[in-house]
View: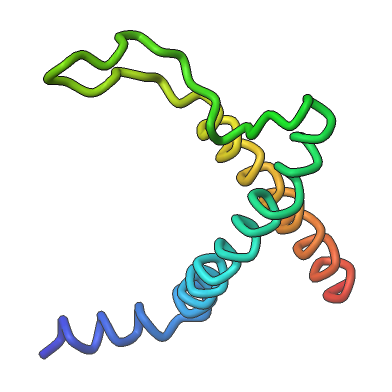
Amino acid sequence: MKIIKEFKDFATRGNVVDLAIGVVIGASFNSITNSLVSDIINPILGILTNKVDLSEQVFVLQDAGASSTAVVIGYGNFLSNILNFLIIAFVLFLVIKQVNKLTR
């Protein structure tokens, strides 16, 4: 049963527990940032760009035919996801900066 003890020691080390907590908080934070991007930032960008919804922007590679659907590249959704990532990264930067400030 040495392997079980080793696993228990590994799993209860501070770094692993901290990582697990970070993953859970990050997953729940995802819905907040998705809402921020889709409900607040995209409408503002829509006003600035003549009411263009960024997430609906696509390049049409092939129009829909009688028996097929259109083939498109959804670059607007991709740009929304990049914006979402940048917001998450910036907020995490601010949180880590404050935690580092408190630990000094």
